[in-house]
Length: 299
Image (cartoon, rainbow, N blue to C red; front, side):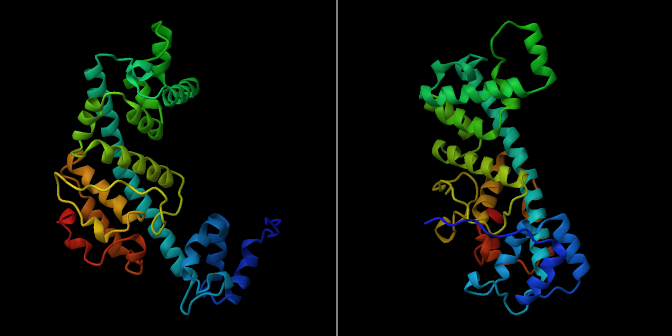
């Protein structure tokens, strides 16, 4: 049975005595008020939650829990998101380029993305086309305006559309391509089979959105379970010891795809440096196995 929401808004300065009464140490109350004012209690509550004692519904903090520890988790999460987003950007751009090159060439059709003949499911195609049309109506990109003004075609070529549609839409377009051989050509550029590629690009698109919207990432239990890579062209991990819903597995996906996208990358060093900078972070909550640095992927 549903109940009526009865919580009220509490101003930052009034949250301090409440949090202290629950056992949270706040060494600098003025600074804490500033953080609560500029970040917001609801956002910060995701980082205060791990500090609660069991049962968490009693809202009493563990011995030694402090506002500073919560802020440390918040800063770590923010830096992790920036790091992951920067690497995902490289992979996303490469995926878009692969779609442009392999599919356009194989079909010998620069307008393939808006041609129903090249797709398996007409319902999915129509949904993708509607999303493409929405982006075309919304965009102010010069190259789209130039195309409209110069050419009579109803839609721009695939490589122009590719520049304006979200990654999630592109994932749906890839999965709906009729030719398995063409999908295989795209996936093989990244040294993974089609089912794994289909899964991984969707997972990375979701993670990219999480990073863009500044949502909690580091200890989140992600709902989408990525496909497992059973046979790899590059060093990989022991998936049997890995929680595939945690961020560690997604970090491993990024690292693997960077073998082709950016072979001389410094992603390993960046991850290790970030974890060293924040030694109090519980990496087990991120899904890192105890001996993660010994796994072939990170050697």
